[in-house]
Image 1 (cartoon, rainbow, N blue to C red):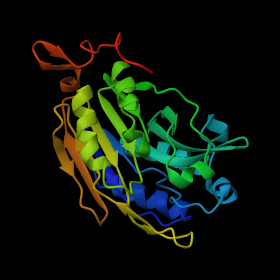
Image 2: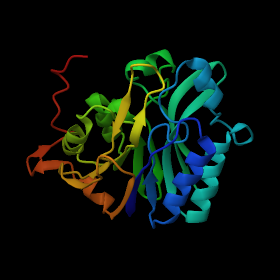
Image 3: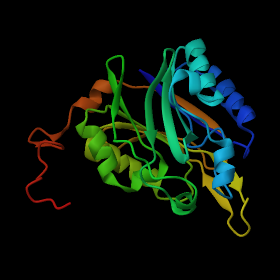
Image 4: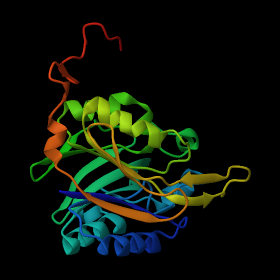
Length: 267
């Protein structure tokens, strides 16, 4: 299976241009599954909820879906690939930092960010969806978003539910995630694709945000299979064998899931 990421430089508020730019980048690649950044279509630094609501879109049923998801589904059909992407979602009066997994036949997965970071708490509602695993043919994938990386329960839950590959749209500004995701892959014996963005936004006085890039693909042994540069747009496609994520043994006597001592753990 060929999997990869597109590391982009979106312009805040220019949703149409950001979406078409990402699709143009995807069209140059041959892949089965690609991951785009968190909020790839809108940009990140909203000044207030009203601004986020103005750029958010419906994800739900076909008739109500916004233009970004519809365009991604169209591109998935044209390119014969699955695409995971982050975008602001509007659902009634609520706004979520969300991600979708789309394929040629429509939406395959949908997730709302559980762990909001810093100023996101003033803009978005907390995610209210369980962590779930979707099937792409014989391969099982799970969605998480950016700051979810800090909480090992997320990747562990997805691994327990059978995920072979973790899809991780991100807008990273802290330096820690690129060093942490190899550990998440190792402790769960899964592949992970983190798609970050680059560029700087300072739409709120005194709150400049510089996105660190360093998108990466990590493997079940904790190895970094590829890492993008820090300051520029980039892409990567790698061929993997997802079955490698189904061997949960660290040694013949140690299984990362079956050896857990849940009788001793506290909530």
